[in-house]
Length: 179
Image: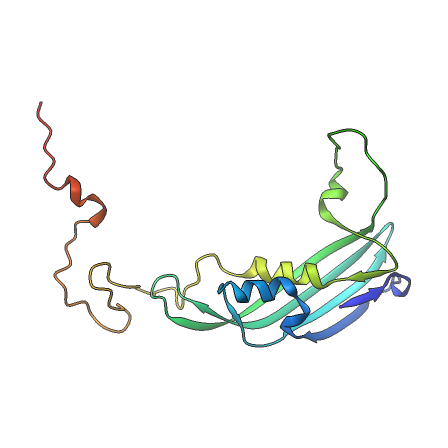
């Protein structure tokens, strides 16, 4: 998704698009790494407006993904959505001789662009990646797998004689301290 900088006015311009996964190399890499699978194109709506010396982009996106549950390892599908605001500022080509450069707050919250066109694809991919759950769960009440026999506790009860003693501390089971 690109827009010419000269086409951006003070009145917000709305851009709507349904982009295939191949538009976002970062998302292709996430899918190839097995983090998730994208089941639908990324639907994006952006409101782009010029404000003072920067460009404000308010947007929302949505897509459908397939994840693996971190407890039971089962596949499940989920909707992913994000609402975000980004600021773009023309990149100043100033060479710094110093090793340390002090950044102002506006430098930390804005994205630099060069030329007469802004490509939103890298930042849209970044927004999708930030919305991916760290520990995906098929459902909040997922019981996971039995640590002894490996049965999915959501589908069946465990038949092993599961001890309440953690296997991590089994070496300490017979440990005695003499005083």
